[in-house]
Length: 244
Ligand code: FPP
Image (tube, rainbow, N blue to C red):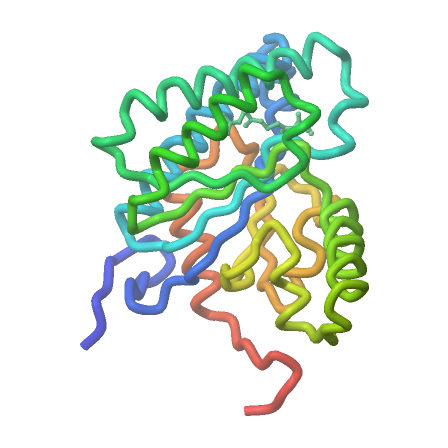
């Protein structure tokens, strides 16, 4: 008998959860617009949703949660919106550091952080350092992240290594040059808000990920929506190019 939780639409098998879930937190702007609020209000509510979904992942036993918080392309947004997202990240990290010993969530950053403010970089480093020891869920926050940028950096780093050692590269060893080094690839990628594309997110790692799309906007995405995504995942037949 497995460990099950009864959910609307089926039973969630807690022994067959995806090890790694990745989420494109989309729809904050539309959520705010529908309410006549500034886009920053959508991001603020989206940040709360993220906090709750991360806690839920820890509760049920998802090991890795990777979220797209700010892409290499998001700098094209109006400066006040970029500033609002950066302020939210700062606020989140300050609170995360305060509550860290209680929440025990390990946090890592994927992305080129050199473009961030010194304060944000310092908070990111501190968060990673303090949470290093925690086991359970690891949250990867993608900030100034783009998959093409990540792959190009990996190629450059590998070329340097090759000049020094002449070491050959294969799929597995190439993964060690990515931000996600050492982690399993995402089993499930969730994109809310009705858009059905990857938008430069984890392009290398997504080779065999199951994709799940829902029309719910990210600020409205609840634990119930997460259960629905997990249930859908558990019904998928993963063959990795082979046959069963
Ligand atoms: C996409 O929605 C969302 C973003 C570009 C930013 C995501 C940021 C947060 C959730 C807040 C900061 C994060 C943390 C982890 C504290 P959109 O603005 O593209 O929405 P739209 O498509 O409806 O316009």
